[in-house]
Image 1 (cartoon, one colour):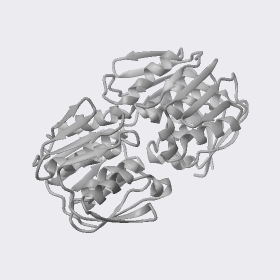
Image 2: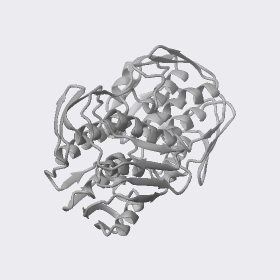
Image 3: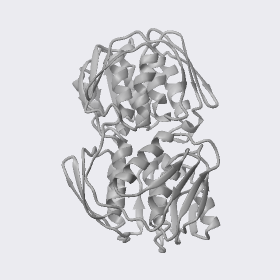
Length: 422
């Protein structure tokens, strides 16, 4: 699939939301580090989850796949089956697993593709230098070779680059001899993602003390406990589906845990603040056709929501300001440039700032050919406004949705989307 051509139409229906990518990554890693059998249910096998699964097999876990279930037999101790760990385009996989690789005391080589090869890893490089752990990269890019033994102790980590570094350390530090602390040297952004990590770690028997998100105290010599785990529905994907309902007839997102610890659950409040008609019924969220207006959206704690919010804002009344979003420049694409340039290409009025966007809403867009920048969230955000286009919307590299939501175009079609896949 190279392109998807969408003929503008109002959409509506019901969709079972894919399971949380964050929950899948974390539960698979924790179960693999435990001794004994764990069952992970409601796994959604996006490309990112597939590479994490294969990586944990390389670290010694026996993993069998049964439809949307993984049966994981962990050894309780890392045993390297292959020194080559391929991370695809998954930043989570790479950053979560580097501390495990740095504890093997033998060479591990982490590879990737796409934009992942140039995603920043300086937080880890600084730690390696302090602990005399050997590492080698390709002029700051992947592949990354590591050979050493991570030590317990005090870690100074920035909190304004990515919480993925903090999560990665939390997987390995409990296993080391001696206690450790992770001290956050800046304001911690994406706190909800750290909350998800703490919740999943606790489920698998690992305790981490959270001191006001400024310090995390970790006792050494802990052991992961095998356990069964069911992954929640993903609020990151709910954002696009709700927007489709707001701009169409009615979309019901099912199988959602309303009191989830996922930070992206705030999308319901964001859209409501914009004037959307959204109803919560048990484990369903229903978005109905609504007139929405501009807001000020602080993206510091939920950066993945920016593309979906920006797209809806482009066809809302008034002006929307998106602030504290500079970290989006080092995602699968420079998401501030990607979403602003492509929305403008189809008739929107979006001004790009260093750390955000200013969006003046318009009643209609004109449609045309746009690029996904090979970024799953950009592709889905553009698709959400197709019903407001006067002409066909053609999205290039539309298969990039496989990274997180392989069934997106199938579900889009089930809502009444008139699409031609080329």
